[in-house]
Picture 1 (spheres, rainbow, N blue to C red):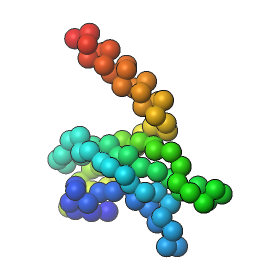
Picture 2 (picture 1 turned 90 degrees about the vertical axis):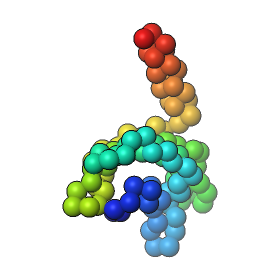
Picture 3 (picture 1 turned 60 degrees about the horizontal axis):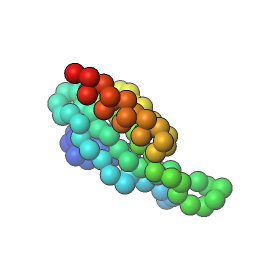
Picture 4 (picture 1 turned 180 degrees about the horizontal axis):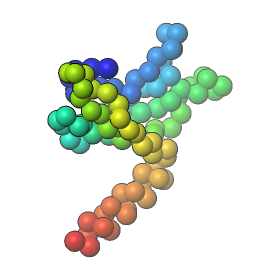
Length: 95
């Protein structure tokens, strides 16, 4: 893990092969509890290429100076992401 929120990533490599490639991230909140939205792609070993964009929201807690992953929610497709956006816009518009 990391002690700097800006260094947190979903990049993942195994045996020199990148299996998860971070494309972008937005820090939603900082502090003892930090929330980050990541855009990423997973490597498909069968096809030998990266798959479609996916999204994940990760929640970290800072303990003993290091951020530790406490929870995550994966948004598996653009369609699911669009549905979340539409519902949140509806809810926010109701206020």
